[in-house]
Length: 183
Image: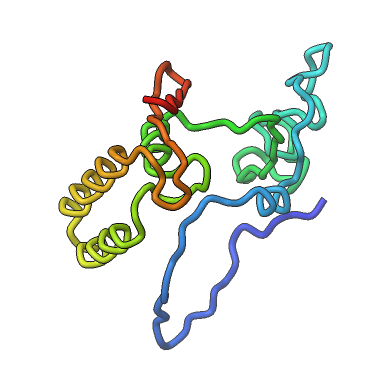
């Protein structure tokens, strides 16, 4: 097995460098699959006799290890040096983060359920866009403007683009969203 080099010498330059920009984002599925060591397909955690982990399970040794004795199946390091490795699990249905449910409901109330466009006339939409650009450093004013935009979109019953009737989207139970087309 190949040993990973933990430390490396970085040559010192005379002039400091400047970072032009940073972009933070969530990895998309193709990047996650490309970087992954294992696709988790086995629902069992351990072998039936209780000794050792199951291959292609969520405790597969190629994902990293949690005990002091064995070495990692990917990098060959012990538990204190192995950083852990990516794996992925394909889900049959999408899973929504409960913390974002309120934001999802707000967004669903702002868009047409037929044509997926904002429930606002294009000229009014452009006015809001311009106002948002002018308030890019004013978080309190931006929040108030966003609330006004949400309230205005909720008032619209027919889409100005496709003339489809749109109802109200509400969060009913813990993980349920209901849509009343004829509110």
